[in-house]
Amino acid sequence: MDYSYNEQEQDVADLTATIITDAAAPERLEAWQAFGEPFDRALWAKLAKAGLIGIAIPEEHGGSGAGFVEQCIVIEEAAKAAVPLFLSEAVVMAALPISRYGTDEQRQRLVAPFAAGDLLLSAAPRQASASSPGFQARPDGDAWRVDGAMSHVPLATVADRVLTHVTVDRGRPGLLLVDPAGQGVTLTPHTSVDRRQRWRLTLDGCQVPGADVVIAPGGITEEAGSWIEAAETVARCLEQLGTVETALRMTASYVSERRQFGRPIGTFQAVSHKVADAYIDVQAIRLTAWRAAWLLAQGTPEGDVVAIAAWWAADAPTRVLETAMQVHGGISVDLDFPLHRYFLAARQGSLSLGGPSRALAALGDAMAAA
Image (cartoon, rainbow, N blue to C red; front, side):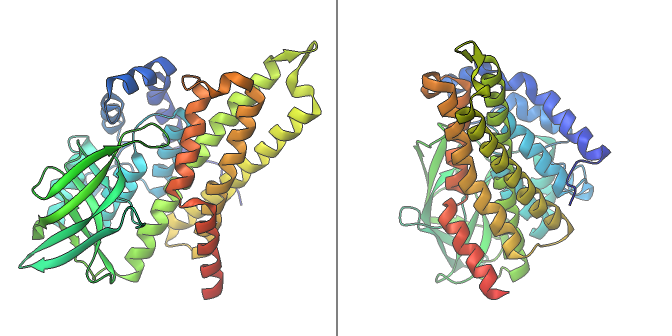
């Protein structure tokens, strides 16, 4: 299958790369990190003005009306530059589900301003854990009272709403929009592997009005649940692809220029074989991730397609970045060295996908159900 870009898709990739180029300069990324901003506001505004933030949002909802493939291209290009935007959480995990399953009022109030860059959305992770038990809801007239907690929520202090997955008696979930500045909401900053800001979102009797109910708890359909899960996973895979692509390109450049014993180190078998293995891993991530993205754009792909992409994107980047770090030598462990940023991003991306073991378990479930 040929997953190379058509003319329109290539234009999207070129435009995104052009806008992001200046923002990707190491000195600018370091300045952003030192300043303490949760994301790059100026870059976000430029992408929104170009129609790239809402490129997959239908025109009638205020977006550019392209498609999910084009959105994945923007996500991959942003990951290549390691810029702090959180596009997966803001666009794929928040704006697109609201656009797809929300009310007309929510699309007008939230989605259209989001696509224009005038409003910010975020999302809490779906998967609960011992430290992040998730959210439970109880009805309160037309509203819902929500309790619980989830960590690793980006943009929490600047988002107008955070989309959360909420259950009733641990049954089927629904989607509620939480005002992070509302009563009963506590935001606690915590560290992340990639050194980007995230928060623990704790809700204690937080009231969510009916206007912020996207799908009532317990009311999510199988189609909606499958699409939301697949879209998030595919977006994460494309982030990983952008990360390893750049790391591999940096490594290839380094081994062709760094000389030892009068020769480029890339001419030594021990180095060339490891870089070749890394190239194979990158191509495997590319093939499986873009296959899943393309099929999702046509509908909802089979679970094994997404699970295979998730496994490659959770497992292979660690090998690619370990190779890149090794051949770069001691300089690679310097936190300010550009490659180290991609090493941390790959680690964070693997954790966001649940790790290789969870992906293999999901693949086994999909195969058993087939």
